[in-house]
Image 1 (cartoon, rainbow, N blue to C red):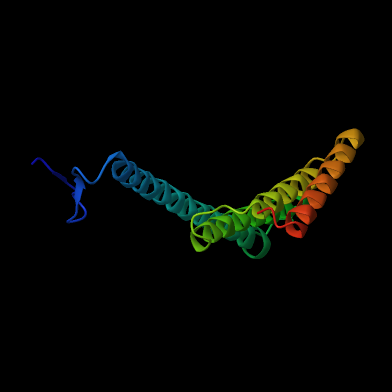
Image 2 (cartoon, rainbow, N blue to C red):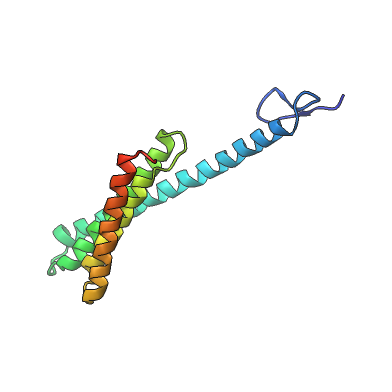
Length: 150
């Protein structure tokens, strides 16, 4: 009787009683492990970028002797909020049994649109269109929470 043993566990993977379903489960667990490692790596990269933004803001406010460019600092601050939101998204992914909640993507989208409006608000029709997009996102967030679709 030929059996293939797993490298990670003592149970035989494929026998007469264990069919393709068991192999598919092991393969999906392997893919989830790889996916989780990449998501954790992305989280670490985001934390590093967040620290770099914070150091840049501290340097611009307290250390640099030149005039503070407030538009630049606000843009840096909003980028930091985006990093924080994506880090929180990854934290919730691991806390909620490997599930990305749609509400955090909506929060990140709203923050990104607000950042864009603050950084580049030269065209009135574009700004109005982006404001409408924010309203649509807020309503979708309301309906998502109201009907618990997530």
